[in-house]
Image (cartoon, rainbow, N blue to C red):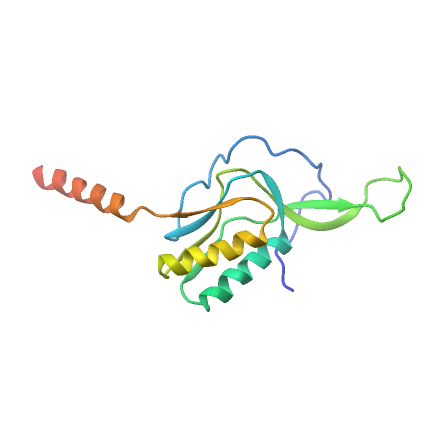
Length: 155
């Protein structure tokens, strides 16, 4: 399995940390017309990201284009079973991504809304958090462009 992980890091291990507040950025669709938005804070592992990616790709039969907007950059360490306290921190087990509520995790374009919604629901089932299907409001964008064009013509 070819899972996501950083090529190189400044430090081998990190503190666990906490995930406070809502997503500061990456809360709007930037690339595709449809997306999957996180509604809860959680660490998502590289295995879960890969599993969701496979679910989307297989449902869409490789049609359209997909963007993964999260990357697992946090090393999670774990000590072996039945090991006494002390003797340092355990070795790195896997890589995870801290996801805050409101973060767009996956985006899709080039497919119809029904297929995109089904693919995202399959991907959401692979993730440990509640997610929401979001789509770009095309009518709003068209209306804004029309208003801008009218103002431009008036000048």
